[in-house]
Length: 386
Image 1 (cartoon, rainbow, N blue to C red):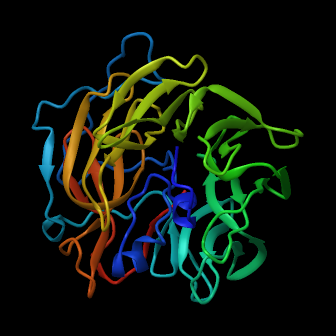
Image 2: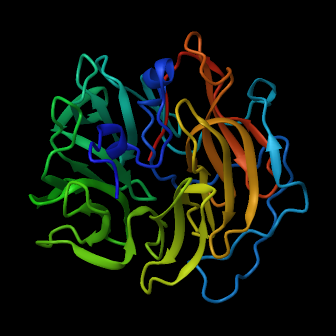
């Protein structure tokens, strides 16, 4: 059961760490979103990725990465990392969305929560001006906003960036999600919607295989349920095997569930979506997502509170074996490809509220080596996009 007051940040980033003070000004704009399958070059300080091995049965959708022979824990000093190539997925730096040599500026002054790219357009979920509880999705092309969709709180795109899905739910002036929502799916010139008048806390999780996966509650304080919806159909289909989902693999076959609680917090369970078979459970980490091939799950420490998470980790999706974990001050972990994760990291001490230095870093799962994917900026909004 979740807190009755499901505030907007919980809707936008249910598995992200909440921020305070300047962290709120920056990290509140960081919506956790799924990474894309764009191939990234090996890190400047890393050897070639280790080949993969075949997992035991049952298994998730792809083979896990071979366990590295090097130590599986790295303590990072962000200011000492070498500079590498820019993220190979859309990302926000300041008010610019950058991707594959393409740059689009987000108009206005409202904080940016999440970004993505669909064909030649950029999608951005932004706060109303001045920053408050209301949000809208902007569709921007060649510097022009050609569509505004009110109340959007979550956004995902397909791996090939040809389509997007997003969910809209009206937010009260107290920042609480009201009953009722709409799920949208757009591709090319087509925009379709599914109205969910009796649902609470609706959030899209993935758009893959022609289906939009979203979660919703029947009651204000009820558990999340997982649904799949084929755009154009009159209703979504309940997936009974997954309770309280937090992430779906790129092929829709593996899911992360946050339906287990203990005295110290919540536990994450990785399950096969079709059968409900449990691959593993962890009460140490909250699972944020999967690499595109589904072989690796990643997340941050479960009981992280306040400014940032002190530990992030990548683990085999079929066994839970930790492949590598990183120590530092992190928010918003995502995958860049099957071998690399991107993390928004702090280069200043946790809790510092002035002249906060942050960067998006890239880490290799097999070796743990990391590099800067963006330069270290001071009080610079950063978002890893969809």
